[in-house]
Length: 203
Image 1: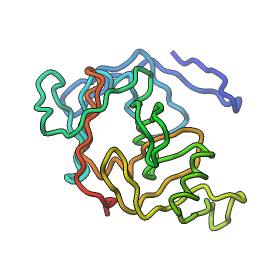
Image 2: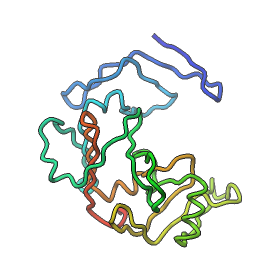
Image 3: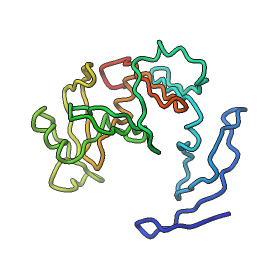
Image 4: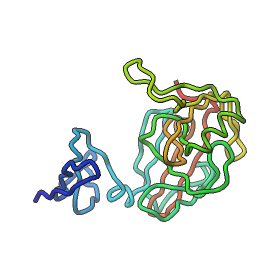
């Protein structure tokens, strides 16, 4: 069955009964519906991932599905409890020491992180960030820079180099920062583990 709902842009969103999905020969647990979203890529959402422990090993270029009940967590680094929401969040300071808040862990965001406008401006000024204005096809968009590059930042007691942060609606940690770690999401136990493997961004 197909259902359509109106989004803020008045474009229909197509919802379908969830198909049977396999990873290799293993059938994945899914929710009841999927949203095609008008794109051609397949995205595993939280309706699926909440059943699993998923490890992202960027150094090895692998994603692993682990048994959440039988883990040697001593090899996974520091544990960060996940905030109980529909999104993957932790309660922690952001990349530049702003007070504890819900910090989104966004595997779809390409930079190290994102800050809301006032914190972005403060970090750019106090930490001597190098402004990188957003451009589309070589044309600069807007008067204020939307991206800043920093020589270093200290997060949770560890120092990281060559950090790129965007300006946006949420405080979040993105893929460029996660890529410096072994990342393990144990969704059934509501915990994320980070084990730093490099201070520099992956090449």
